[in-house]
View 1 (cartoon, rainbow, N blue to C red):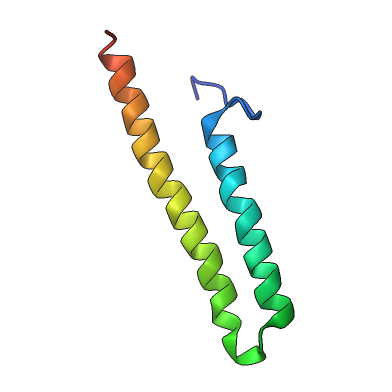
View 2 (cartoon, rainbow, N blue to C red; view 1 turned 30 degrees about the vertical axis):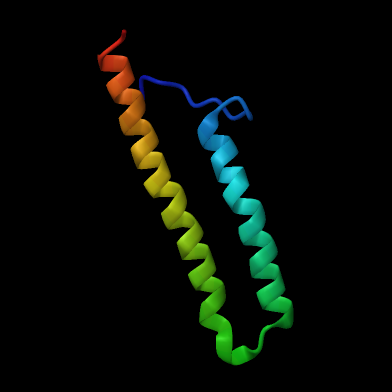
Amino acid sequence: MSERFELSFKNKEVRMGFYLAVPTFIIGSIIIFSGEQKYQYVRLLVLVIAWTIFYIWRFFHRRKQKKEFNNPS
């Protein structure tokens, strides 16, 4: 835990998480309130897709940061 995590909108990971969380919440709420009981899996699917997108983006973002840190120009 050598590096600290900054919880503000200056941090790109926090912004990206917020950009994914708000639409996911809105879409999930619409599905919950207007969907039928037989489509319950769709809510979970929306959440899993959002988490997957975020963590794939985070993986590539951190790998890019590590390359830039190791190879300063």
